[in-house]
Length: 129
Image (cartoon, rainbow, N blue to C red; front, side):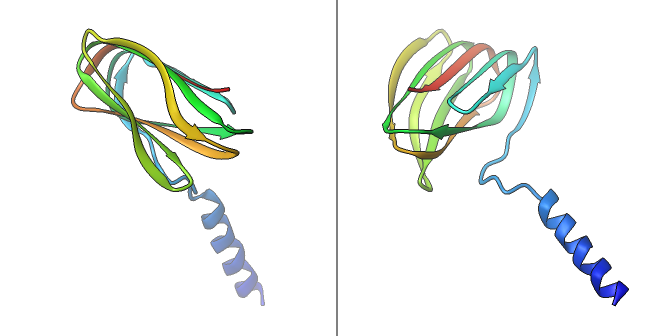
């Protein structure tokens, strides 16, 4: 009986420790600052290479508001709402943009920033309003 209970507890602990997120961040960065709350996220870096994932919670319908700026390199930003990953925008070195898009309703929204090689001096901001 003790063995069965111990096995059950061990399996339960393993399952609760495993991440349930659909996407995972994986990156190399220098001077990297980021934040993520329920309805907004940002990242600011000196150098960044890889993927950064933000998880937002939408409380009503609307668009994603975003801004991005890169000194060099290129990045593509995707969003996933209701299980469909779609391109939101791309940005290259020397570009700065601010816009909105990616209609969402109530639920979880993933923002995925993926670089193509190393990017320098970048700022990305996302808001759900």
